[in-house]
Amino acid sequence: VRATYNYRRYINLPNEEYAMSLNIIVCAKQVMDPETPMSAFNVDEAAKRVVPAQGIPPVVNGFCENAVEAALKIKEAVGDATITVISVGNDFVMDVMKKPLSMGADQMILVQDPATENLDALGTATVLSKAIDKIGEADIVICGQQASDWDNAHVPMGISEMLGMACLSEARSIDIGEGTVTVASSRSDGYEVFEAPTPCLITVNNEIGEPRYPTLRGIMQASRKTPETWTLGDLGLSDSDVAPALTLTELFIPVNDRQCEIIEGEDEADSGRLLALKLREEKII
Image (cartoon, rainbow, N blue to C red; front, side, top):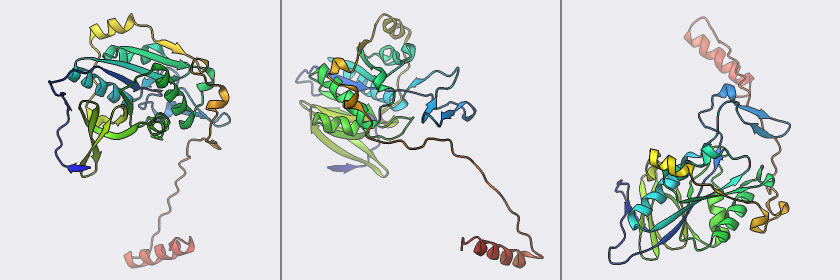
């Protein structure tokens, strides 16, 4: 590990003495729009699930868009790369999920199955790793650092473990070498540099760079592309293979029930004495 403190953000060009062709896979997730107002946010406590807000479409997770941007920068650097975006879920909104294609990704695979409706992190990692295996010959897998719905940040680690790949986390820059990848991983006081052989998995956040806006040409090209759809059966998985390992016992919106009591005395000293007595009475001090 080489610790350094240069804050430039970039993805380096490879050595011009050799050419490379990379197969890059980006994992993306459809999530509720994080800008949804609290007044429109509802939880079905009996079913233990968040109710989709009426009239507010979902979005591609923000860090997943950063992952697409990282893949596009690598493709621009090496000149020969294929970017495949994969996602797991049910009830996809196609106009939303096609955004990575309009940004410049080459193809998209959606694993859509009723059994994926309530996957936990382990189930999601299981499905994604099987999908990556089915695609085959992945050189680099790029994931967003975490999703804005549950904020677990478990899935990328699970994929890297299941596929036996090194995981380079929180990449703020990526350097592509011949058979190796070097990343600068963000730290509170700078960054650390790590190197791993390919294939490997990289997680990114917004420090890798802002996702580019889809161009009109990109939107038109995406409109002519039809994502490939797989089911769990196509991956050799059954419902029991993705059964939640995590038991969700309760899901609710916290109730804000604040009460304020004004302590008044004859003067400041008396007010302080009365406050101390009240705090002691409540067993706070």
